[in-house]
Amino acid sequence: MSTACPADAVASTAVPFPLLAELRANAQALRGRVLETPVWRWQTGIAETLPPGGELWLKLELFQRTGSFKLRGALTAIGALDEAGRRRGVVAASAGNHAMAVAHAARAAGTSAKLAMPRHASPARMAACRAAGAELLLFDTVHEAFAAAQQLAADEGRAMIHPFDGPLTALGTGTVGLELMDQVPGLDAVVVPVGGGGLVAGIAAAVKQINPRCAVYGVEPFGADAMFRSFAAGQVMQLDRVDTIADSLGAPYALAYSYGVCRRFVDEIVRVSDDAMCQALHWLFRDMKLAVEPAGAAATAALFGPLRERLAGRRVALVVCGANLDAAGFAALLARGAAMS
Image 1 (spheres, rainbow, N blue to C red):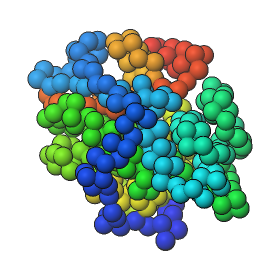
Image 2: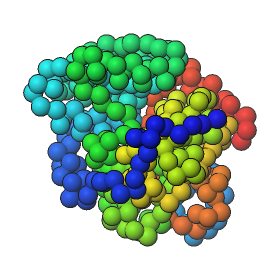
Image 3: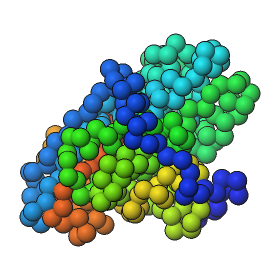
Image 4: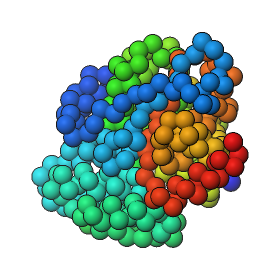
């Protein structure tokens, strides 16, 4: 089940969005602090089963520092703090990738970070956060972690570094889209994993301003489909429960800013199952030698699932957004995917 968020959170599709000039200026500001991640054309294995005439490209954001795209938004948001804000510190809620990025960015800025995380988050991600000097606070659910982070921001005056909403997040994630459009000109479509929508909002804003004819599709798990439901309802929606192996995509609700940017620039949100992500994870490992987390396989699952027919024969890029899993966890998911292939 899902419910509408409070009335003041209902978004307008007229919300401001990052302009190309702003995205390019931020990309320059991030130069040397984030990596320009590579692209690679997928031509083997499962890619050979696609109809002829198309091209399949991977944007390999899993090779980013901290192992995911999240660093771009975290550095952008923390970089916007004034000296007093840096003294007070930052707080974030995350199942891991955003927490790791905030910990890294806070250390680089010389500020302190408190991170609210669900207890089921990957131990490897927790260890990485602690190694970067962050203080971890653990909760039973994602909902509790978000609520605790917001309370810390109110009580201690810390800046809330949101994992998926707000202009600074989109300004950071949009640099992925800038790079991709330079690296692979003439794309017909870009497929992007969706948790809360911060990644797809930024990428879509960049892509559509560069080439309005390039389609942008978002991909959510069936068990964490707040943006899909928000598109269907015409307002931001909140999930009663999150249930997916893709914990990096487990946002419990959509929020006004990212929803508004997505409604302006994203053509459609599609959904995939946990099994489909495991199978895609297996294909990425088998064919491309990539060890990704389920979220990093979501775009691949969509391309070979609900988007297969409509993107046949097209020049398509899939965003591989992250790869932060411990070896045992990855092996279990790989075995699950292999059993279906």
